[in-house]
Image (tube, rainbow, N blue to C red; front, side, top):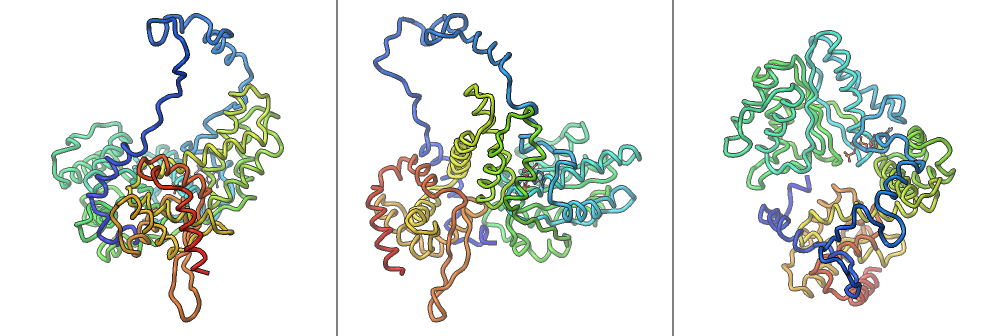
Length: 486
Ligand SMILES: Nc1ncnc2c1ncn2[C@@H]1O[C@H](COP(=O)(O)OP(=O)(O)OP(=O)(O)O)[C@@H](O)[C@H]1O
């Protein structure tokens, strides 16, 4: 996989750079204060804050009570929470996947081991939802049949190493069983954590489904031959076959990266052998249908006619991501509530789009290294200047070279630049396609952003190093390079 087969410059050293540089680089602005405002209070907050009037009009208590009586627009916030597992009748347009996953996992209801599954497709296309909904139903039926069934679910996004992942699995297994983990989190060998996981599973379950969400993110230490996700899959599959785990186990691996299985080592692949289930992007109509099934999250008649089509259209621009559509509905509703409006309107969705987009970009760029920020900045700067919002890797690299020169940062080869950009595709902020200049010339990658490249530049400029770069000079470099390309 590209994420793993990188240039060697993406080492653990880079990970530590992430930790230090992000905090320093993307520090938030101090709160807006008016230096000229006179304060008569000796205490910084003023003792009167709880009881007295604020800004000469309403007291805090009045405002709180007003919220009590004001008609809230949102009736059921859980329907707008992306982590909430909605009932089956609210799941739209995923019949095929729902049937496939159900038929394969229902084996757990008898005395058999369900097959392993690999669910892949872009972000927000229902992979986790379908898995959780099926497991929830199996669990309910199993309890009526006296079968101890457990769903042990981990999201691998923030797990650095195999040892951390195994401990997390043990922790989740313990929570599901209502027992304690009996080994410490730190200072013990990974083998002890595996043994603890086996113990918890064997003592508490007849049948277990391990759900490994965003598995491709579990890369682990780069000095190991196989990525950590490959080793995890191997060990879990072997544990079932070698009777380390006596319960029937099935592993559901979930990833946005369609090529993840290509970097699973051959040893792991021959034990894991999953059934594949593909999840496509949603189109705007499907997204509308998903959102309409949740419209009762709001009180009757408060959602303007244009709200759902617009939220669906915005979400369709980001790979048909249902999570984004749901986020837009929630944020638009909250904005309307805050403004005291009696309806959610188109304008709230537009404001929400701006907010959600900025948050998504911020979330991604907060966690990436300075080198990746430079690659992303260069590529977004190119995309801003092209008619169709795309950026060629060849042009992007030249702008990257300009950026690294101007802030005196390390400069990597074009291959590394491309690898770093490819790694960023896992966050579905940017996507790429392979293109060719023509039959006799070379290939290049064409990057396209899921969010507006202007928002990406704006967010990245909060990094103090990038803030120093002259925007107009970057634009001139981009224009000159783009002319050369055509
Ligand atoms: N077909 C659907 N019907 C109703 N809601 C859906 C559907 N697909 C996705 N959703 C909702 O969209 C949100 C994101 O879905 P989910 O977490 O399943 O995506 P995912 O494919 O696992 O994405 P990621 O790879 O980012 O984890 C959730 O709130 C989920 O309930």
